[in-house]
Length: 80
Image (cartoon, rainbow, N blue to C red; front, side, top):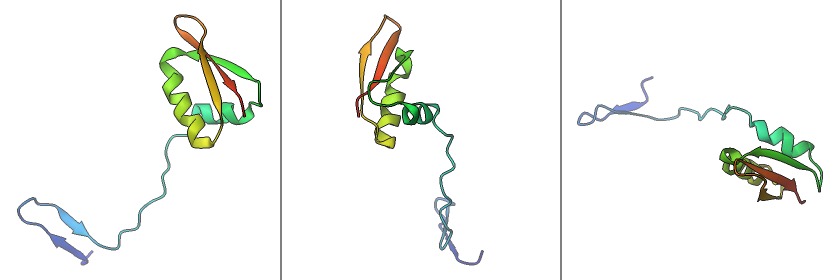
């Protein structure tokens, strides 16, 4: 790779023309569940996982609502 410039004070190499690879992140365990649910369906998850499920729902475009079920669980409903 001759198309780079070495920055001597930091030791980092700036490279030009390197393509960005597609993201191959781990598939969400919640995305498949949310996509299988229809309006009115619900699931119970641990309270510690509510934030992750909400983020996944937003990412895949599914509208949900949550309520505390017990001291350690939440119930998630698909509303749209």
